[in-house]
Image (tube, rainbow, N blue to C red):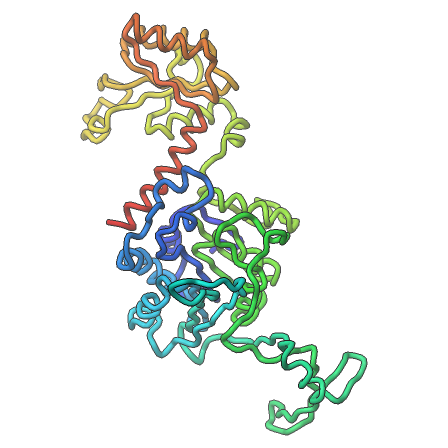
Length: 442
């Protein structure tokens, strides 16, 4: 199983590929059932199919249930699971997680309250909200790994603590306490004031402020310190940490920093690119220290493609079939067939490059700007093949090229659709998000 890898896509498909009981720690912070657009993503095309994503709690639960089943399946018997949520759905999610087909009520360990310290403002109809809930489960209570964490003393109790920590040495103030060793023998141990106090299930930790170096612009970004506490408490060095809704990658950054292996998935290409950027800022190199899978190509990447590889990408992205001839193709780089023809049962001796005649020719140019001469050549190819409609793909089109397209349609009845590469990239993202949305709401 590969680790230190980012998958761009719906986590449900990726989770099914992971072997059972292979993950040590899972933390997820999925989109809440809030009907707020910010839980979508940053770019406009990524928001299109996520506005009012979950019309009710039942739709949200229906979306999460199959993903939680897979997450439970891949978690080790010694593993731990953290579900980060807020008031919108936390109670419904706990009922789901308490089900016998998931973790079960007896494996519930804590409802952690993250007090993020919101500035006090008066509300007219209810008390101000200032916390999230993190539901903490074990795959098998009693078998799970847990390393108790310490937190700093509050300012209110620090003065009192100073009187209890009456001793001091080169490491600072300390008090003496009685402990037992592995054989049950008692001994006196030093407990230093700077070590803090055992953590409770209420964590006071501020949100990321506007000037923080951590801030990546992601709407629901969580602070690294929050994930550090979870990862240090519930995993060991080299354990595998998984985040199935990793957003801008705080879990991944924390896992890397704490010397854990990791796997992250997110459906947002924008989020995945930000994760790559954050890892690069840590000195890591894609293809060497970590890997990215299933990322839709960016326009910048496509500009660097070899000509024939770029042609194949464009034709396939439009649903066409690339031409088998890569030189002297006479202006046709691919053919787009009606769906009913593609679904036809193949007849011996006949394929889509043979007797089936209905197709739309596709021409692809990798140049920065398609000009009038390029359109003229494509018109000739269309007329030669007796095609009334064609598709021309390029990074951009000159005004002369656009005028010629309008002229040839008006005067000769030839219809040429000009498609810019950035629109194809957007369509690919759009198709992926739409498919995920339809799966969610079906």
